[in-house]
Length: 494
Figure 1 (cartoon, one colour):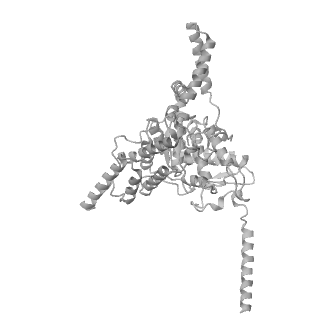
Figure 2 (cartoon, rainbow, N blue to C red):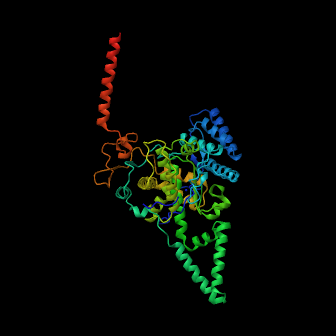
């Protein structure tokens, strides 16, 4: 897999196959989760009513911390979490994180330099502050109350593909049904055809008006330069999406891929933008200095702590990041048969892995081969998760297409999960195994009924290096003999 650039997920673009317009969320639906108070006393019902009114008041006053504390104290079976309340909670999160980014935009650059503006993951992604702490706490609270049934559905290493992480092209295609080339971002002809069409238009305009063709070309280039510098390319992008509607669809589905994978891995999502105009007015995606046309902003609390506190970056954190980064490319391949956007995502993953310096002699440096293995592994997990939770993905795409904010998007995901009885996986879909052919293979017949937490024996040779059962047995025997000898010497002393 050709690994090149990625990012906040502010990410590059995605390309999707056919337009899906599933109205899984009824805009007129009043209740998200209703309560059954028939068996409770009127006094309890009155207290619950007060709590509901307090929550409404906290949300109205943008007091997210108090809203979270209140929800922690209520009985979910007696509390009416209406659709309106549910949406308001996440819309408040989106607004608070946006304002927080705006206020801190002029402050010094974060120390996470490897996440630059080449991809859709901004340097702000891993910045810690009170706003993000409150956001994370609200997500976790709603999850504990069962209002978020699939948030973190693949967290704690509950990936659909278990086993070796040294994924070869053969293993990738066997697991996903998609050839590796389709998951390698390819250059699009959209801009080429767009440029050719515009040049033809200018030629016709020159002939019709007598204006010098060279003057029109120079004027166009100057205008395009100003558009890029001052408006983040917003005008050009608007024209492109109007002339080539498929471009808009690909951007939409690419970002939905990043969004859902981050959500399934338990990373709180802050917001999503689908146009250069939106990124230009949102500091989370660069604001006036934006250089991206679409993006998804998410937050990984664990990875953030490890980087900001100069701790060892664990493999589980690396794996989460890899899956979210490859989520957009995976969405394109699943929906359109191949990925055209996502070069920036690949580069972000490369920069991230290369920035990890082993702190001991046992850990290995991320060389080219290991990076390719990791990119393929992340792409496989993302593809399988998007397929496994397809109803929620389709509902998210529809919500984003309708211009839904964060609240509508999360509601769409959870409503689709509820309607289709989607649940976290209890066991992997399949297992990657290595053999003498060096290509490895994908095994889906889980005859032994392997569950999560029982998969350590299927780790790659690299991860299990040094854990030889025979050596371990001999070492145990030597240790037991030594202990018996010491015990005998102690008895003789007595």
